[in-house]
Length: 351
Ligand code: C2O
View 1 (spheres, rainbow, N blue to C red):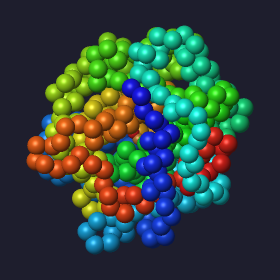
View 2: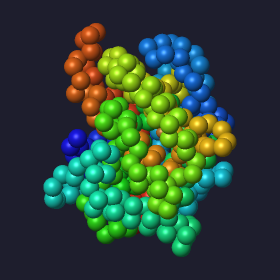
View 3: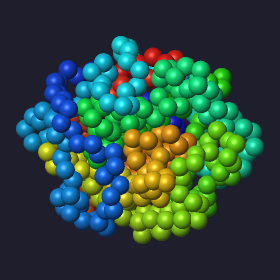
């Protein structure tokens, strides 16, 4: 699957990063949503049901009935156990890069190339070494997981999950994570693979993830048989049809604004959560992928989200919805002007 990654992110992000000074008041009253995200969901298609079960985010100042664009968090006011390093952000605008479009490969393609496997493992090895040599470097293994944790709990006073920020926030997160890995191995062309669990051919977990001596091994994973059988049933063709084809409106697919009545989209609530839960389970003796606050400690997490990103990229290309609605991203300024802050490949906080 050729995805003009940087391109895809850039054309999206140019609008996204427009600076908007609308004020959003954030309080500490957000619910800890890290764990209940993955409580079993009713069958997709019953969005009313999902919405009734969704406890709206508290604390956003809501203008009218919709949200205003969220502003980047003030990292200095971060509280909680997973605050990434605090530093002043630098304004950043995406720049077009020269050179060929980089392609992200599926697991089955990427991991059939020994040279790629070595490079991928080396990149995560470096991420772990950085963690060990300088625990406060925001690019290190745990700090990268913290960035995700911070946006899913009270830590930053906002949660990008179960909202229409889910796809764009994770696209940015992966963009920087990938650049960090590329920087650590001195290869700016490095790309992450996607775990295409929606295909029988791509579902298998490559051996490199299962080798205990590998930097991409994780002990907090479900046993392989159970993991694979759960994923096979929860990412079956009917499940994919629910997540992708049956989501015939922008808000069914992408989710709704943070604020009153917010809710996640069909992919997030369906296959996305199912793969998290199947991989880590939601309680001891496993958990990393099973809770958003710890998911970033498993390299599979990033590959999982690369597939989520791919599904977002695919959705507008599907045949038009039966009801005539275009399958299109929101055009609202509230969505386009949302702001986030991330650490770049030089450990600089950017927004
Ligand atoms: Cu930020 Cu799969 O979650």
